[in-house]
Image 1 (cartoon, helix red, strand yellow):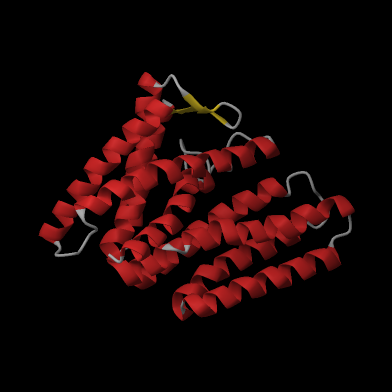
Image 2: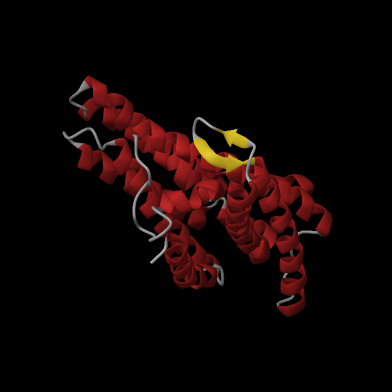
Length: 273
């Protein structure tokens, strides 16, 4: 079976379940926690791949801390969530320094676990305030718009891509692909607004905001992808894992989303949707 067919089948199986999790705030917390669990495990597993002594211990600590954050944040609010994030950082740093046996492993033990919390758990948890403060429509739009951008950027870049964006970290990314994804994202956002407001009476961002949002998705989604590609090249791996057939790991699937989600929240807050 070709990679494209495998990717399509996986998406058709996973996507409906993910969308259903936006029906309630509690199910969204569960979805974010589950995705964080898989993605943080992949990042930490890569980070500790060359360290044998105690690596499983630090992976366990990092994953547990990462999963705990969206749950605590979702149930207790932003102020308590920030306090919890700082507390996790301090505890993990102290534990890492005290328990690490090899000096060469300090960087991984301290930075790896804390990066997992900030980069994956912290960024992805912005779905929760988007849902609460700006409605489930905008939360689901944030997720699905990134899907649309990725799909159309991939096929447009594959067909017309000539001007490379990052030859060092992501040589397949092209300006033409980003433009194709941007146009598709804007058209999709407008269609999403019209359909959801008509069928479900759910408020979605305005048409003028949709234009800004589409640019944000294109720019931040691209840089999120390049950032994760840079991490993989540093650790000399092709995929973060194999959780999603045809897509690689969970982190490979959400890399752009990790940059788009918090900036979407900032956009909505700034423009007072």
